Amino acid sequence: MKNSLTDVAGVRVGHAGDERLASGVTAIIFDAPAVAAIDVRGGGPGTREGSLLDLANTVERIDALALSGGSAFGLDADGGVQAWLAEQGRGFKVREAVIPIVPGAIVFDLLNGGDKSWGRFAPYRDLGYAAAAAATTEVPLGSVGAGLGATTATLKGGTGSASARTRDGITVAALAVVNAAGTVTVGDGPWFWAAPFEVDGEFGGRGLPSSFTADMLAMRLKGGPAITAVENTTLAAVVTDAELTKPQTKRLAMIAQTGFARAIYPVHAPLDGDVVFAASTGQKTIDPLFGLTELGMVAANVVARAIARGVYEATALPFAGQPPAWKDRFKA
Image (cartoon, rainbow, N blue to C red; front, side, top):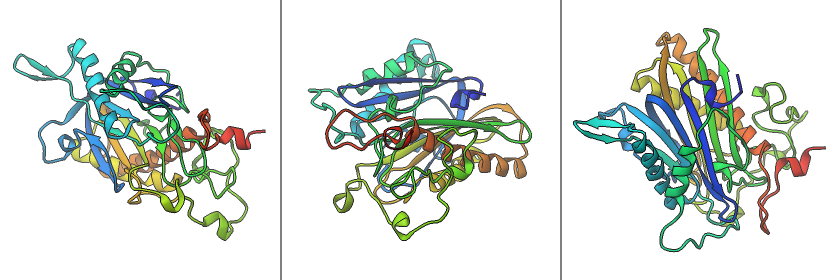
């Protein structure tokens, strides 16, 4: 176990980014089409092919996911991932036509100090292609891919990942892009809200404070009173090797959203576009009631850990007025 999304067999992850732009793309590639669903809780989401994942609709399986910076411009990243898959002959077959199925979602990172004067066309399609082409089983964390330019209310955000197994040996893993309106740490201190779920000191081992003050519990928001509903969003992809139907995958996504509440304060606000994708590679059978419930419970813990790791591993942007990295502020 690498404590990453690729602990699920048949899953690869690639990042591409531009330091001057301060933005990037993360591609999640499935070696074989995976059953998928989506759960949206934030008030300002930006998605592509989200309707396709609705339970009433026909297509059940996807070839990849694209997570991107760039706000709505970043939705072009899906086209780049699609182009790479098409070159591999991958996709949904309609007679002789082959159409790669690539849902995606974006975070807002347009005001993080990077140079966004890209001219007529934004670079996200090319970044999406590069991320897909770079996909491997090694998953760098922190200020990479879609999390390169991500921020939170108090600290630099980033890309995190984590994994676990249920008692029956089902693997579930998550990758998160943390660009939250709120905080991932308690007050102005080093403690992560997700601390009760930490494994082997993976985000510093600081635990929780011995007590909580009113100041610690006060709301801290990116931008303060001038915050807008389009500047934030945390994205997560949850993948399991359990064999799930599309409705069961939807339920997994819904339960996994609990991990956002365990790791971000506040969360699911009108100020965020929070989205969870869930996918099943269908390699191991699972009990549809007890087994799925346990899987969701573990998935929520894994999401919380991935969110904390995204902030813990991040590095600060080199622009004035941007938040510090956790390690710059707190690591001895």
